[in-house]
Amino acid sequence: MADLEVKLETQRQTRQTLSPICFQVQHFGSSHGVKMQSLLLLVLCAGLCFASSDIHQHNIQTLMDNVVVVRVPYAHGSMVEVPLTCGDTYEHKDVFWKKNGEELTPALQGNQITVLVKEMKAGNYSCHLSSSGEHLNYTLILVQLEPDNRTVILEGNSPEEGHIHCSAMNYKGSFHCTWKKTQHRSHAAVLLVKASRYLDEISCVVDADGSGIQCQDIDCPYKEENNPIHLTIYMHSYSRLEAYTKSFYLREIVRPEKLPNLHISSGQVFSWAYPDTWEKPRTFFSLHFQVKVVHNGQSCNSDKIILDNITEETKYDVNIKSKKYVFCVRAQDKYARGPWSHWSQCIVNKNEVNCQLP
Ligand SMILES: *[C@@H]1O[C@H](CO)[C@@H](O)[C@H](O)[C@H]1NC(C)=O
Ligand SMILES: *[C@@H]1O[C@H](CO)[C@@H](O)[C@H](O)[C@H]1NC(C)=O
Ligand SMILES: *[C@@H]1O[C@H](CO)[C@@H](O)[C@H](O)[C@H]1NC(C)=O
Ligand SMILES: *[C@@H]1O[C@H](CO)[C@@H](O)[C@H](O)[C@H]1NC(C)=O
Image 1 (cartoon, helix red, strand yellow):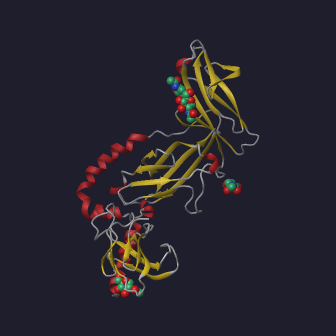
Image 2: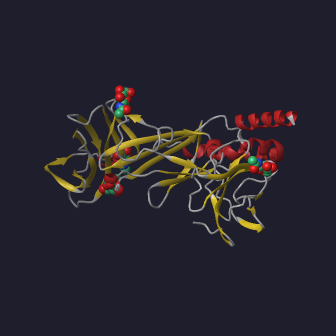
Image 3: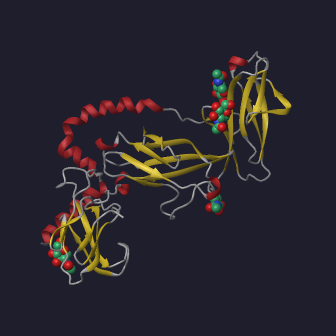
């Protein structure tokens, strides 16, 4: 028994220091390794796009195509001159500018101009041909406070969680992050997402409702997880720019999906299944389960507990006298010990058993 404990402990420690995926590589996928590495190299080179470059002043930077960021210590009273160019192609053209789609008085004319950004009063400057009004080009000027720690666009969760919550259903490299905009910033929009692990870029797609991203780390399944994933979300609200960052290892955010197929199989024996999305083989990527029985009418998080136990089986015999109770079960990676799944539950009321999802 003691030997088994020691062995389990060692396994656990090994799986804690390495991504479980590595085990998959070592145990089951080594012949794939070389092929995948060359595929990786191709993908790795695909996206070297977010380099920042200095313009004239150190506090003005090009964040991405057509977007310039002015960094100021305090918005109050700040004034920064920002040089704008419509484009080399229009050097000898008669160019005029609009701010946020409106002409300015006095008119701003010329291919190269300088605008004064007072406090947060920046905007979207577009240049046009004087003769036809034809739209030529634009530069969006945004203001970011430096340091950028007085954020107002996103709501903070707990101090350790920060503003962004990320979760994955397994170790395949796909993960989803969400955030919540504050009440008065619901119009704020994602400007840019940067995600990477060490030198490798990770591609992300912004959710349709603008309050999350779906990312795929293609690198992940084939390497040890020695480096964390770094995430930066640039959000803007009018002219205000805020950058939100988060760093994590995939193993810290892998949370099994809610357990499916929970039912009473016989007498008071409850059974459930591994989530379909969980890693296989299950003998290797084992889950363990927390089983909890709480009083009738209570939620699974209640501390009015009748029974609380851990099992590695996908069934549990509830040996209690009460005929009215709530049976709860949730899962966690037995070795990596990441986040617990959400609870699955059955409400038992004498002979009536309801295991429908709430
Ligand atoms: C449009 O403006 C951007 C600066 O915002 C500049 O980098 C780019 O070269 C311009 N495009 C053209 C076609 O001149
Ligand atoms: C800025 O203006 C250009 C055209 O004038 C438009 O294409 C672009 O979407 C605008 N950007 C923002 C963030 O409003
Ligand atoms: C922001 O950071 C600066 C410098 O690091 C610090 O002095 C200040 O107290 C911070 N402000 C907040 C609101 O955390
Ligand atoms: C906990 O569950 C195990 C089966 O997984 C069982 O053998 C044990 O008796 C249970 N302990 C308690 C206190 O109910």
